[in-house]
Length: 139
Image (cartoon, rainbow, N blue to C red):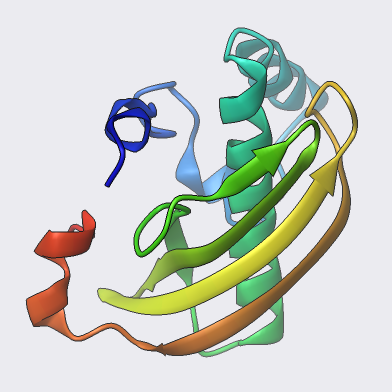
């Protein structure tokens, strides 16, 4: 894993509630405004990755009703490729109900990284537990 990947702040470290990023609505406009204000303090590359990770959790949760996505690691099996507002994360992983699954996604945001414009993904097989540590996947 790249040094940059190790230094990426988690959503929790940024003070962002994971339930909000799992596709659930914030309780009020003030909450959404606070989240957006916080995201503006994150460097643009991280902001784009976090927005796209959040979209991944929302899409997976809506389209796979047996899953409850809790976290996405964009760099689990390969570093994401990012250029401007585009990101491709072919080696991502998503955690749901104490299991990790392979995930690949491509995403384009607005230039400021605040709004997801296009998103597509592919959900893969479950990641065996014995591989978790090697790929920074936590229980």
